[in-house]
Length: 310
Image (cartoon, rainbow, N blue to C red):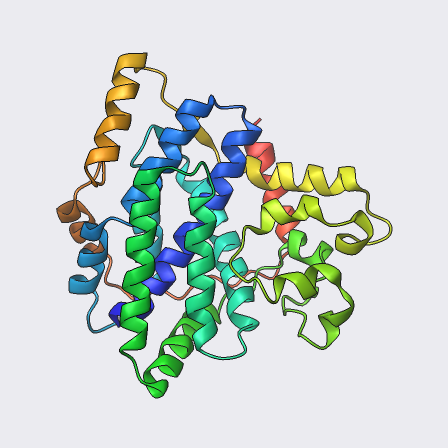
């Protein structure tokens, strides 16, 4: 189960980085601190130690949703950034549904590798730096090598395992619905129905790219219903990102911040948590837990979060 677990965690982690980037920009966090956060989270997610831990710990079973939550939370908080756990739980729904949508549109198993490559290249575009690009290149090579070692049956099995993990989730994402990519019953628009949607036609051939960045590059009439305005779309996105309660610690002076930056450039490590701690957390939570299935509109979820943050 090693490869399916890594495909799941890395693709979800990249979606998380897309959202972190948008939230840092929305909060007007200083560019040097934003760069440091993105660098640290990226390096933790793609570190050889993390890959090795997943490969040696989850050899016989597919990772559980509780373990996914723990691992991504620890990776997200390995930097100056701090996240509210409740906010991360809600964001996990968004990350999972976007990845589920990408998996739904796969035409063949090999497209999973392309989605992963686009995710990795996408996070490389978030403030490109040499250290990050080296880790991204190594991750690309890892997936390319291991994927090519699989036979056709094993590749199909990997995709089916991921789809099985994602299948219980049925969250209606208003953002996807307004782009005409998801229906009100939670199902996704198929390739035949979506063929008249310019956004759909672009994205079906570019699964894994930063969906939040692409929104602004398409005409208003092509991504929202006629009654919706561009301002409503922007407000919805802002509301969506507000649930990611990002806090940047301010107790470091400029010298300490620069030192932390240099350390990350020279050494790959996961801060504020060790692999032993991750192992204890994950093994402590061995009870099978069914992923939640939400029937309510995701907008209600966002309104609740937004109200609690005031």
